Image (cartoon, rainbow, N blue to C red; front, side):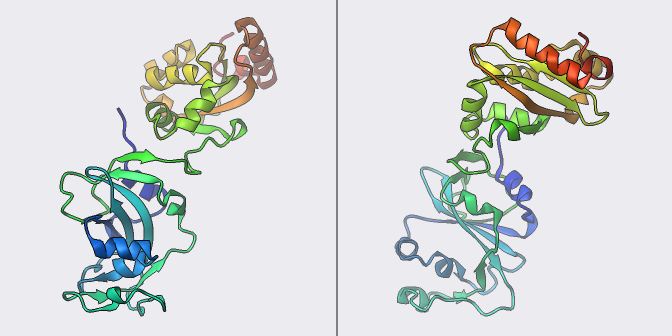
Length: 281
């Protein structure tokens, strides 16, 4: 089964993995629990040994969760050379001397794309849970993602997927549950566009499994049983990488095959996909 990795998400959000530090605060530390409860996560996190943040420009903060998992809390920017920001009403215990720790300049990130994942994203930290700070290049599997705007279904008219995106959605039901519900609730007329040459294939779904069932066939077989795509893959085994999947018209779940094919044929005529695309009939 394919896994969605934290590194994939960070790169999509333009984080430099080599300059990103991951921190997992332990729920066994009363100082952390008290600081987090009182709203001073940043102050607590930025108080570290003198060279702790050297080489990093972003810090991603997690709290320990069940077993060796971790829940994402917040991201900060390390502004080297700036004066550390401390809230006027910061808890006194955080400001008191503690080992050799000093305050570092951590600041909230303007327009941080990760903000929608706060308290909603969970990762597998790994067996070395005692190692509470790790490099962003370390692979972490996303184990759960609770109702974030990025993975909530965007609406049928906004579906536009590459093959890799389609396969990721099909293979990760827990993360893309909204997508699975939406795509299995309808049948549809869909288009598969070959971005390498502009050719289009028009298809339809009319089964009890809905559009999800039909697109699952493409994700698993690459060609979905389509003869034109079989021939294309015989010549180029990576042809599917250039495919883009979209929905042209939503159809009722109980539509008959005859009714669906009639609508499908109308779109073929409109878009001339028999003469200039991948439809053979």
